[in-house]
Length: 141
Length: 132
Image 1 (cartoon, rainbow over the protein chains, first blue to last red):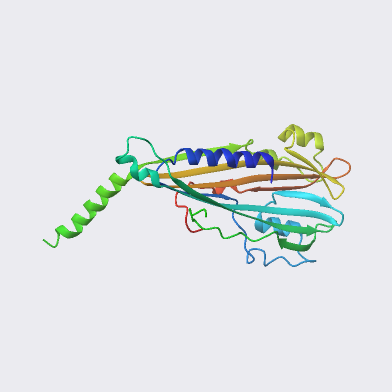
Image 2: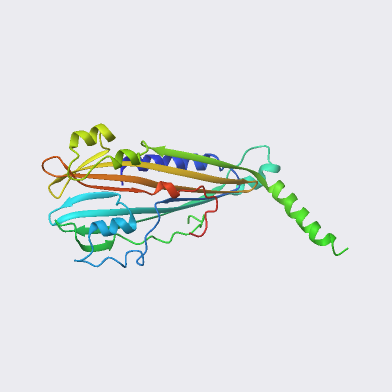
């Protein structure tokens, strides 16, 4: 992933967390629209060209060189964050600001990689790893 | 008496919504300059040179060497954050999408292909973090 993007994500996450100092918070960050096997079912190795793929899925996030041709990568991310501050319940009775926070972040990342030959024909396609199906579960233990 | 029941329910819902809702927030973050469609349209395959691409779009964000060709990559990120701030719980959703432009140049420095997709056009503010 490009370096400036991770910086942007960090700033946005901090911003979201700053505005969320209440009892519970549920935050979700998505980067691009996750692709499924159905979305890439039209790709026939040896026949489909990168131009066909771009027409259907848009431009890849990166294009890199390899010994046998070109690798085009589509990246996506789905992050789920949930947090509970049990100390918030004491806010009405306690003179001190007490925090007892549990939180958990589930980071689901995936990428579709397409290997193309020197004529830009897709020879192989595969998902890097499937999204981890992270759930909103603040229990960290 | 029967007429009052639905009205009472509506009033209770409105009062609860007003009491529970602290507010909402809209935030937006962008990275990079907008990729102008007219500048991209001015690039013609087989005729436009590397210098002309640079004068139209500026220096690329990334310069790649792919398949024996130079590839200029331009990108822009757009992030929209919608937050629903309630008394005891907050819901936030951050949606990030990118516009990417690849200009592929041949060994003579002439544009061979131009690939553009603008994903940010359909980017919306969303608040509800559950579901798709």
